[in-house]
Image (cartoon, one colour):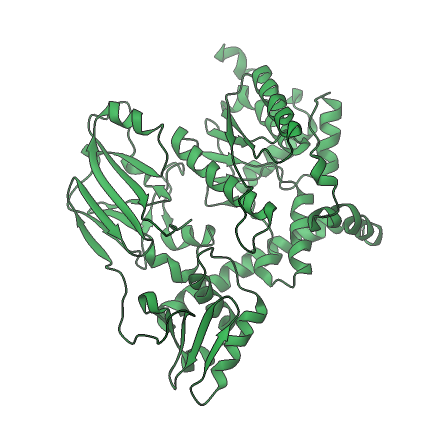
Length: 488
């Protein structure tokens, strides 16, 4: 009964829950009444996260839905994990979605762990959009953050890697246990007599993260007992520095980098050479990201090979690692896929603005996606909810016309769904997602005279969301055109 629930005393909360609530409030992770999607593996961190947030239901009126991903990589053990989380959610009366994912087909030069993580995050984003949650909560702890920072440090990463994981990303993914140590999680579960699962792969020394966890961090704790806390503080400092440098890089790319369509990119050689070393590397890294379909960060060695060409006085072609050919001219560095013979001097950029009637089908060259905008009935919208692919449903009566699909431009703002009416600069939104500056103008935006209706493939504007009073529905959906991948 609601009146009884409101009288539940905070004195009944375990000390760890007070810590988590303090983090949630200080970092603005979520608010009372929000609907949270909990990533639930069955391990101690995710089980603690679910049980802690479950105790907030009476006072905070939060709604919880759990999601469990089964990769099937550990046979019976994977099935037992799924059975355990199903039993736990049933006992807590928390809805559970179990999603099978197949990570056995490996991508080139991508580890199994990285591939599984990317698949998991994409699947969570799709599910969050489908069921309309406000936040996705993940059970990463301070120890996970320290391990991530050390992993990147040992790879020779710059401050982007040393920033580790953000406590909040894109206003959607949150880490409520961000300031909690793993031992505190285990102590809480022991005191609550709450069972959890142990992933046998976490003990295998074949993974670098496991060696850091079981071998390196114990040694660091002997040298400096507060080593984990110090690493986390360093991550927070590096993140703010990285954000500032990223803003400078975005501005520089707008001035110095020009897309030549399928022929690659042209960089103002003298303009880039005049920049500080740190910004030279960042601009080149952004361009290399565009040259790789996976958008993975190129190595420092690859970036340095190209950067040294800035000082050349004669034109020279150089085949670089990663299948990118670099040609030097007196005024430019021309980066192109190795299979392209000669860099075209003519711009082949995609059209940046399309007028949209209803219905319309737009083939967006920037991401090689086919965008459909059409009016649908309530029944059709419900049927579409069960189908695959990204879509956005808006209230047709809230729209004004004409509609356009266009590229991002400086100064764009929108109100991301789930942000409770707070607007956000689109540039900051892209930065939170770590989308390279060179890719941002390739992402399609549905625009109306009232402002941005949605960033297609990512997030819709809250102002146009449907409600119980909606009578007419406009659906924007995305299909991948054959042979290519869209923006992730």
